[in-house]
Image (cartoon, rainbow, N blue to C red; front, side, top):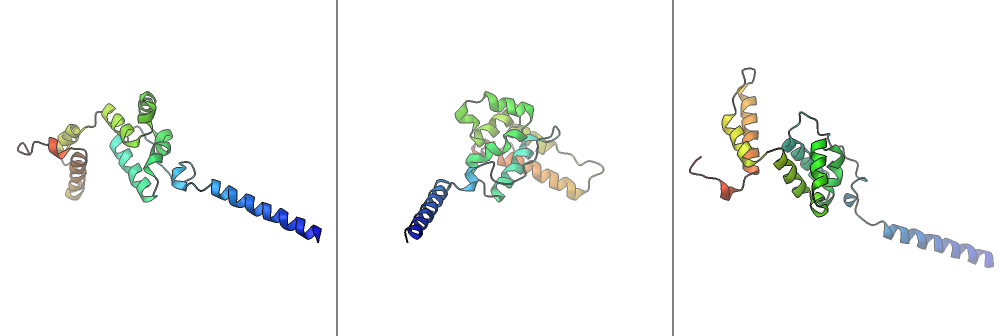
Length: 158
């Protein structure tokens, strides 16, 4: 009888310990950047920074990853130049995705003005079909409009 009681007490303690450890590990997985299994692309030398960021953003949103952890997912995929920009930012800014993205795009000189120039100077290449050309032109227009503050556009000039 004593032995059964001791076994029951031991089992009860084990169950309580398991419950406590589960309560301590209740953080959602999207707040643990290295627990989520996603494949972030490497930033290659030929890749445009804006395309890298838009690809990552689509991937993170589709995977429902918390925006607070996006920097942790991309930091080891950045180019050396982009990592140097990250290293020079103050700590509170370096871990803010939007601030890091803006700093990198600024360093690469990708501003609404650049996107606007690209849009208006885009030319169809001889080997391109008109469908391909329109697709690229639409992409340039999207880049320009998405990265522009509408209040800063001179609509008369357009």
